[in-house]
Image (cartoon, rainbow, N blue to C red):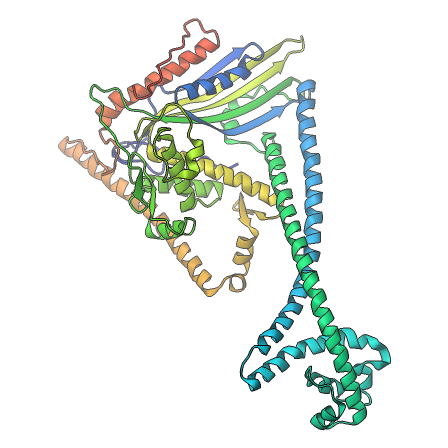
Length: 617
C-alpha cells in the first residue's frame, strides 16, 4: 500500500514550530485546520446487525446534508473458525479465481492466434508492396525512367518466382539448368513481360536458341503465376485483416472482463498479506485478535466527505463564479496548456471551467501532486487536473443553469440543491473497524471502532488535492490489474513497489533504440523540470525558515508579533475570522454528526437535528 500523503496544514504563522508537515500554508494561501474538539475516537458495542447498518445510515445522512462521500479504503478479514461467514467469503474468492483462470486462458489463446495471423498478414503485406511498386512504376511518364523502375520492381517478384515456384519443378527448374547455362537465372531476371519471341531474346541477350526457348516458356509461366498470385494475396490479405481486427477486438473484450473480475477480487483483501494504512493506525486496537482460536471477522472502511459552506455572519459576502476562465489564469503553465491542447477538440479556445477561487491550480495543489506521485508512483497529468476541476465545477451548477460549455458532464446533473458558491469546505474523514465476534456460548457481539472521526475546515485547493488522490488510487489499481494482463511491469525500487508500462520500460532500457532524438531531448527536459520542481519546494521551506527567524526576532526583542500573509484568494485573518467564526460552523456540524451517531445507537442524550435544505444558512 502507498504511504500516507501529507497534506499541507495551516494557515501557519511563523511561530508554529510544532507543525511537522513539510509544507505549511501561510495565511491566505489555504486552510486545513481541525478544531480542537473536531477529532476523537469512538467505540460502539452494538447488537448484531446494528454496526453494519450504522455506516450505511451515516453515508445517507451525509448525502442529505449535501456532502459528497467517497469510500477510499476497504479491507476485510475472516477467521477460519467463523465457519459460516468464512466459507461464504472463501467461496466467493474461489469463484472469482476460477473466472480469472478461464479469462486468462481465453486471453492467451486469443493472443497466440493474433500473433499467427499478424505474421501471415505481414508476409502478404510485403508481397502487396512489391506489386504496388510495379503499378507505380507503370505510371511514370519518362520511358527510360519507367523501364528502370519496372526492372527494379519486377526484380523481387521474379526472384520470388524462381525461389518459391520454379525451384520445385525438379530437373526442369532453372536452378538445375544452371549447370548447362550458368547465366540462365540472371538472363531470366533481365526479361520483361513483353519478351515472348525466342529470336528477339537470343539476339538481345546473346544466348543460344535452346536457352532462349526455355526463357520464353518460363516467362509465360511467370506471367500466368503472377496474375494468379496477385489475385490470391489480395483475397487473403483482406481476410487476414478482418481476422486480425476480430482478434484484436476479442483481446480487448477479454481484458475488460479480466479488469472487472480482478477489480472485484481485489476488494476481498487479506490485511495480513498487505497491511493498509487504516490497519496500521488501528493495530494497537486489535491486539486481542485470535483468528486461530476465536470465531470473528473484521472489516475496515475509510471514508472522505466534503461540501462547501459560508460561515455564520450577519452580512454574508456575495460570491460569484465565472463559468469559464482561461487556462493560464486557472494556474496551468504554458507547457501544461500545450499538453492540454492535445486532448481537446481542434476548436478549443483555451477556456476551462471556473471555480470560486482562482487560480485553482496553485502551488498548494502542485505540492500535493508531488506527494501523490511520490507515494503512489503514478503520473498526475494536466488532463487529470482539468477533469477534477471540471467535476468540481459541475457540483456548483444549478440543474437549470446553462451547461453548453461542458456538455459531456450534463448527465451528472440531477434535480436538487446546488452547492453554495464558496471556496471553503467542511471536510469529514473517518475510518471504521467493524468486529463481529461469535462467543463459545453462541452469543454474537458486534463492535464498531471509529478512529479518527475527524472534521476540518479546508479550502478549495485541499479538496482538489483529495480528488486527485482518488484519481491516483484509481490509477494504481488499474496499474495492478494491468500487470496481471501483461501491459504493465511490476518493479521494486528502494523497497517500494513501482509500476511501469512495457513501453516505458523498454524506452528506459534502450533509449537510443526506442526513442527518437526529439523524444530523448524531451526526456532530458522533463528531468530538468523535476529538478526545478524539487528546488522550488526546497525554496518554499527556506523562505518559511527566513520568515520564522524574522518573526522570532521582532517578537523577542521588539514585542511585535509579525504575521506573514500570502496574496492568495483565501481569508488570511487567522485569530479572529477563522478561529472564531469559520471553525464554529465546522464545530456545530461535528456536534450534529455526533448527535446522529448517539441517536442511532440509542445513547440517552442522542438527538437528530435537521438543518433544512439551505446549506448556506
